[in-house]
Image (cartoon, rainbow, N blue to C red; front, side):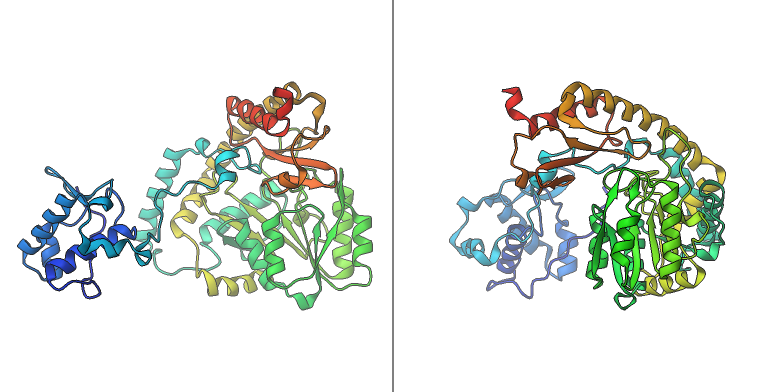
Length: 477
């Protein structure tokens, strides 16, 4: 078996009066501190002796001693491994000091998942199902991208704004699918929408004015602007999206840098901002000279009607920063997003990128550019929309069957999540629920953002049943 890495040992800082003792002590110490974990394959005696400049017999004697004590095990034709069960009770006094506080493990390789992740698998805010990724198609695109990158010498440092191939592909998509009128110079590729939000928070300045967020909002975006030093104002929302009347009251007499909004499917309530309010928001942006950070995080998944055009495509959108991502199309682990703005604003973003990232992933960008240009991305979206719509409709039926009038909701026109309002007081402490991810508590009301996209129909039923037991345990007793 080809070993990916060769374990290195440094004896100069180990204890012992002889080379043999220092080697034994060092191996035991590395096992106890977790550097050599259970099952780790050790170098062969000849190889280790060469690296350390020792006689092979010295290494073999040290190995034999540790095998006899139970620290190591040997497997025929495979090599020497760290034992799964450490022999602390049978250690000689010579090595007992290693069990003192200074040698406690610094890494717990068997660390359990946090309780909230382990006990609450339904707690996701609408992530896609990574099992739907067309792996073979993606693998072929990566292979061709690697060949193309090698031939064109693209594997060195490139454009921090993103490969021109991907920006041209995104330009065509945004023109044809999102109604935008833009050039490739107005597009900057990033590693997901959160990176774009972070970059916007660094280009915009607190000295430009306050930052306005919706009353309920996407917490990582809020954190990015708070960390950048902005004063935050919160604007109300309702069933038509952002409350423009309240926004006018908030910004009256104030200097405003920007407003962050998720108009297509408001996070977390899933409401779509109506066209009238979109146009009024753009008018206010022009009148008060502030930017609009439009986070269009799942535009592709709209089921019941044609999506409303994004703010960035409407008249008066000169100060809109349009943020999108292909992560929802495939999976969060595929880190491709984009920021659309004026060429001047994009240039400032690029300067920020040069300080933290230098450039993106050339191979991923070339692979996705090919899939966008060939129509495979559109085909994949069409397939996923059918699956997600079926899952949404199943979720509606199961919510009605399991909860009845204990939960109120509207059927989302798009996106991968439901906004559930508990119509009946949960048999659970509201303060404790407020600490759970994707639970929102407002005075005596409780809401849940339930992501359904990553679950099959059977899994949706199981997760909603688990949620029912969590919220109303006494009804099952």
